[in-house]
Length: 218
Image 1 (cartoon, one colour):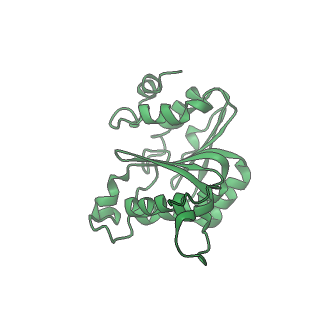
Image 2 (cartoon, rainbow, N blue to C red):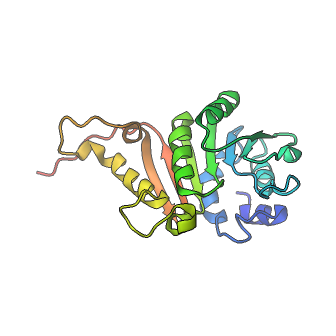
């Protein structure tokens, strides 16, 4: 298994220099290490500086030597495109744009949201992209600390529509077969989320067919 922390430090990404994301990423993504995967990351980095950013895309390129890496950013980051790295310019809340990006990539194995970190943006992007992720794929949300920051639309009130409250609510999807309401109609997320893993400021959502049946206690 490659050392993602060392690779990340070499490329200067804040995923390992500022955050401690390397260990969770290796735990969840090492299965793809030598596979010809398609990875899509929202947010190239560097804000509006066209010369800045791209560190994590280059990290993923090295970590997945057979993978194709795709980036999305609201700013023009085309300078960071290279062999096996392609970059799209657009808004992560633009549903038509995201659908077009995914239609060009096809068969996406991993999606990472490291974009605006605005609560409403993260939720809209997930609702749009998760259905376009391959079965067996993994969706990652970074920097979920903004769930509690007002300037990003966050709140410490558990009734508010924040990143953390939204994803915590999805944990019920995995147990929807236990609902005592017979006429309940399962949602897309009920049918297609098989596990959710929470870390400090980081969430992994696994996609697959949730075919579990009720375990009635007698």
